[in-house]
Length: 182
Image 1 (tube, rainbow, N blue to C red):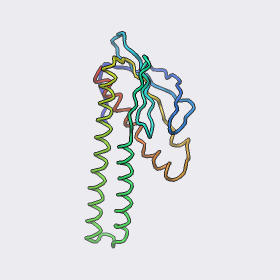
Image 2 (tube, one colour):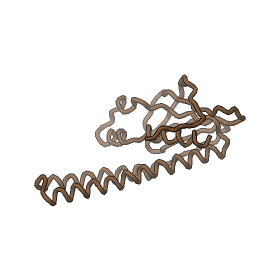
Image 3 (cartoon, rainbow, N blue to C red):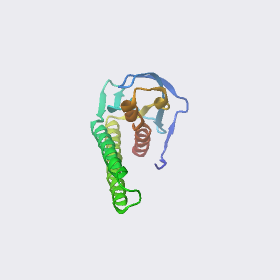
Image 4 (tube, helix red, strand yellow):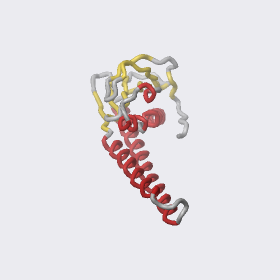
């Protein structure tokens, strides 16, 4: 990921917030990002989630929910494809021509899905920031979910989904795109 250079800064000290999501966390730390130019603008809180990629509460009472169904579908497709191709590769003699061909096919297919996931995250973050900009939001507070993967153990399938949850990447994209918008 690239670093964003813009006229925005963080407030420095985190504030406490409450999150109610598919995965319940009683309280989290949030980092506020504010423009240097003071305006009469609203504040918005963003709660990142696995089922709903982002749920936004704007100060005037407006709620924005970004569904993450497409992202979940791509992750499931990635996991199924990986499982299928790994089992086919395991049945071939290591380093044989067929083994190498399947390994290249696996890399190509998974790269394609990873690119689709990256594209979806970029487009979603761009749309969300555009919507927030149009509603005159000047301060965006994003929940800090650092360490959530280590705190929660739900079982193999849920843990797999939890560990594939790209909240940090999406948060970084939101931050960069918000900074570029001003």
